[in-house]
Image (tube, rainbow, N blue to C red; front, side, top):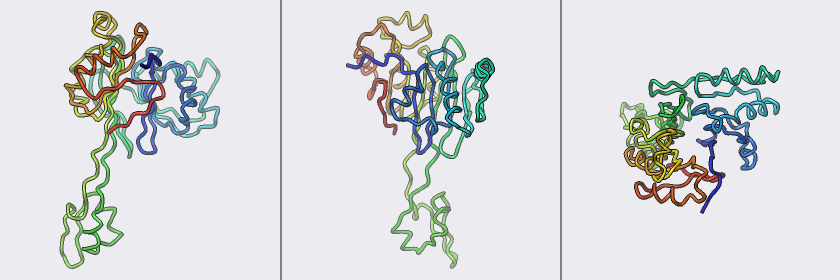
Length: 291
């Protein structure tokens, strides 16, 4: 039964060739090196809130990137005060980064898309914690349809039109015939989605924002035995996390952010599994497949 890490407040999400760092607790860069994740491949960082276990590793990571010669811009999505904190730390240390920091502020008053690239989009939504805190829904961009090679050969479709056809267009032949796209292609797999809900009370209001996600990460700091502490400190129980997964009809649940009072984690897993399946524990260094 796993007992460590108690508090894995940093995750790396891989989408194709893109890597997104979600939260950046103390020691994140040493863990990236330990597990063979290259810092140069990180171009987007999401910070849920400004409690130290979720961002104290950020300034060290950015400084190391700069010392290693990074010049590519870094997009950081997080609370409004985050940029000021980074600027103060850089000024106090007399350091200037070699690369541009693009800061996108999260807000507590709405659910919205905060960032979009060709490969993915990131939505932010408010969580109920002791300070400004947001969750994230990260979605793959829709994939191109697959060519139906038999139909392509049968209708002698020119190679030059493949890109437009995969994007969804019909084919108009020189003799005026229209070949429907549905004949020439097959549907691609549905885009995957990952919902990240860090520190929060049990809050059904977030369900519409994560509805149908392939994988949900939701904090589960306590078991029901300590539900009073969960309420007091604005955290969730394992049962509460599983109930949110059930209500949102997600495909998979991962729980984490465990209180150090639990010497073993099987009680948390058992409590969640009684409500929702499949469920897994967030464990340091473990890789999970989404979708």
